[in-house]
Amino acid sequence: MGLVSQAVHRGGRHVVGVIPRTLMTTPEIVGETTVGEMVPVADMHQRKAEMARQSDAFIALPGGYGTLEELLEVITWHQLGIHRKPVGLLNVDGYYDFLLAFIDQAVEEGFISPSARGIIVQAPTAQELMAKLEEYVPYYDRVASGLNWEARAVVVKDAAGAAGSSGISVSGI
Image (cartoon, rainbow, N blue to C red):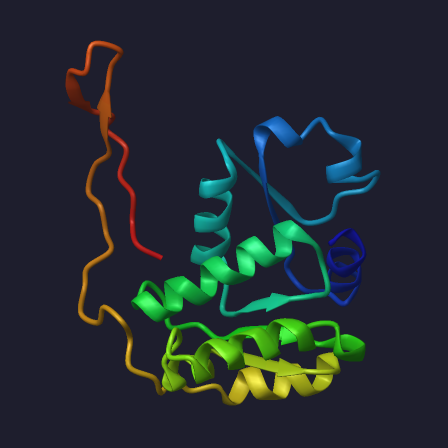
């Protein structure tokens, strides 16, 4: 992530890093050099919500468990109608072929609708992926279309189970 953000910053583009406060003091996570704007958040859930709020699209580079978790979550959010942004896979050297084969198998067996397969855009190079993302038009039937995902307040329960409003306003993605 650091190399990508540094390259984007050198190219004169705006870079926003969203990181849970707990991880801000971890050099292995934050790295030696940070560029652009750093937005601290309470936890990983807020991190993903903030990244989704500020993004125009989602792109997964080759990565590990965290990448897969975030990728599958934004695909699910798209399927549910929480956002309509494109979701891209930079499939360098066929890195994501196994995942795409798994998804195709799930479509064949009826676990994923054929139209939802179109949520994912993939290409082997950044240039090809960017071109596909720019042309992307959501064309599938959402699982839960027409729902309002905005919350006006978060209800917090104390240790005794009494409910009260936290005064926090949460908006949809």
